[in-house]
Image 1 (cartoon, rainbow, N blue to C red):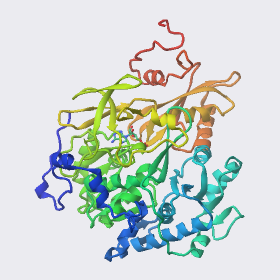
Image 2 (image 1 turned 135 degrees about the vertical axis):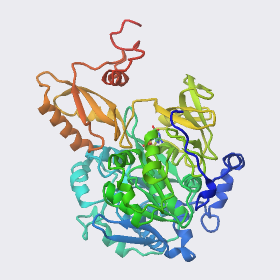
Image 3 (image 1 turned 60 degrees about the horizontal axis):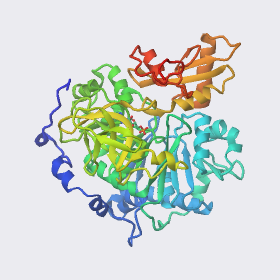
Image 4 (image 1 turned 45 degrees about the horizontal axis):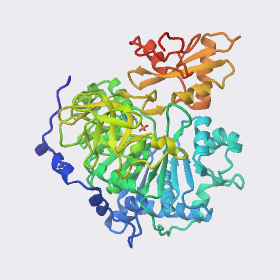
Length: 587
Ligand code: AMP
C-alpha cells in the first residue's frame, strides 16, 4: 500500500454509523430480512419502488417533510414534500392510464434535471411502466438508437430536444405513440402533447396495482465494446439493494441532507439521485446548474449538506481550484463524502482529508449491478486507492478464466476479473432483446463484471482496469464501436479505431485513429470537421476529442480492430501478445 490508511474514530463521530461490526453484520445478513424491513404494498400486494420511496412516508408526520429541494440555475428554490410527490406522481400515473399505456410499456425521459422528473419517475413506476432515462447531452444518434431498441412508447422531453433530435428521426420510431413536452402550454399536434396541460387535467388519487417484485421497473442503457447499446433491465425488487446501501454505505439517517450530483441520465442518477434518499425519508438536494466550484461549495454550506455523493471527475476539478477555496465556506455540516463511477486516485482521497477535513469514500458498482456492491464505509478505515469491502449480502471474488465455461477463484494479491455471486436483488435481469449477451456475463454462480481487480489481505478490493475496450470518460461509459460507426458515416472516413487515452481530469478522453478514403487529405481542417461531425451526431460526451490520421489500423486476422495495440502504441507501452495480428508471422 503506497498511502497510509485513514483511520476513523467512531467515538468522536457526532452521528453513529449504521454499520459498525462488518464481520457480524455479514454473517447475520439475509436479503429476506431486508425484504421484511420494507413495508410492501398494502394487503401484501407485492413491492413497488414508488410506494417504498414516497407513499409509505405520507401517512404520518413525514408527509410534509421536504423530499426534494430543487435549486435552479438562477437562485430560485422549489421544495417538493413527500405528499407533493405522492400527488404529482399519482397524476402522472393517471395520465398514463388515460393514454392507454399498457403495463411494461417504456416511458423515456430526455429532459435533464427539472422538478418534474421526480413525479414522472414515480408515476411511471406506479402505473407499472418502465422508466428509461437518457442523457440530455446525447446527440440524435445515441438518443434514437436507444428509443428504437427500448421500444419507447412515450417520450417526455423539452421542445428544444424534440425539434433538434426527435422530429427529424420520427420515421425510425413507429412504436412511439406520444411525445409529452415539459415546457409547452399547448399541444403541437395529436402526437406531441403538452405535459403541463395533461398533468392539470389528471386527478391525484391513484392506487398502485399489485406489483410483482420481478416486474420490470427501470431500463438503463450502457455501452458495450461491440454492437448496439445494451439495455440493462431492472425490477422493483432492486429496491432492497437501494435500501440497504442507503443504510450501510451512504449511512443515511433521517435528519440527513443529502446531495447526489449524478445526472439522471445515468444509473447513479436514478438509484442514488432519486430512489435511495427517499427510501430513507431524507431531504435530497438537486442542483440544476452545471459544475462550478464556488457554487458547489456554497450549496454544501447553505443547504447544510451532511452526506454528499459525487464522482472522481468532479473531485479532480475541485482539486484544480485553489485549496483555500473550500476553507472560505462553512462545511461543518458535512460528515461523509462518497464517490463512484471511475477510479478515484489516492491523491483525491487525501485531498478530501486536507481540504474538506474528510476523506473521500470510494465505492464501486455498475449499471448491471443496480446498486453499490463494494464500498468504503463511514466507520472503517479508508485505504486510499481502494474501492473498499463488499457490501454485506454480496460475495465478491477475483477469477481467472480457464475456458468459456470455467473459472478459477484466485487468492489474495492476484489480479483477475472481478466477479459477484449471482442473485442479489438489484442484479439486472437481462439485456433487453439480447438474452445471449446476458448469459455470457455469467459462469456458473458468478456474474463477471468485465473489470480487473485484486483483493488484499484484509478483503479490500483494488481496481486495475477494464478487461475490455470500453472507455470511461468523465464517468460515462463510451463504446468505441459507437464512435467508430459514427465516424465512418462521414464521407472522408474509410475506417476508424477508437480508444480511451488517459487524461488527468476526466480519466480518459475519447481518441480516434482514422484511415481516410482515397482523395481526402489529412490535416487540421479535416480533423476539426470530423470532431464537429462527431459532436453533432453523438453529442459532446461521446464524440472524439482527439483524432489522428493513420494509413492503416492494426487488425486481427479475423478483421477485428486491435484497439489494445492502438492504445499501447499511443502510450508507448509494451504491445503484448500480437500473435493474432494480421500479417504477423506467428500462426
Ligand atoms: P456504469 O455501468 O456506467 O456505471 O460503469 C461501470 C464501470 O465504471 C465499472 O465496471 C468500472 O469499470 C467503472 N467504475 C465504477 N466505479 C468505479 C470505481 N469506484 N473505481 C474504478 N472504476 C469504477
